[in-house]
Length: 116
Image (tube, rainbow, N blue to C red; front, side, top):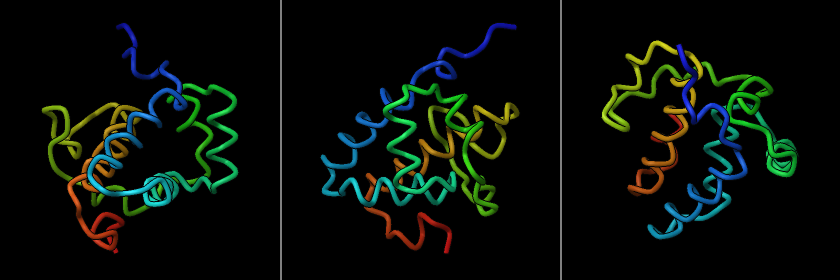
């Protein structure tokens, strides 16, 4: 079985796309970083380090300090798939991140995005 192309894409190439998406909707980089750090456990310095190193999304999630235990509360459809039904653990984490960014761009309150 071939690996998904997205697994080898660099986090640094995806991040600006997320940022552009949320900024068009009036959100900011601090909020984007907040949802990514909530999901992955990275701090600001860790995110910056990953971006400058050119790590792939696979490496990004492999090096994540701790996936938030409430990540399983992220549900819904992203890219035509229900995130809670995705079987590949890495793809599910990537889609969790996509879903959080989507919710941020749609103007959801941060407490709801972070499943508080």
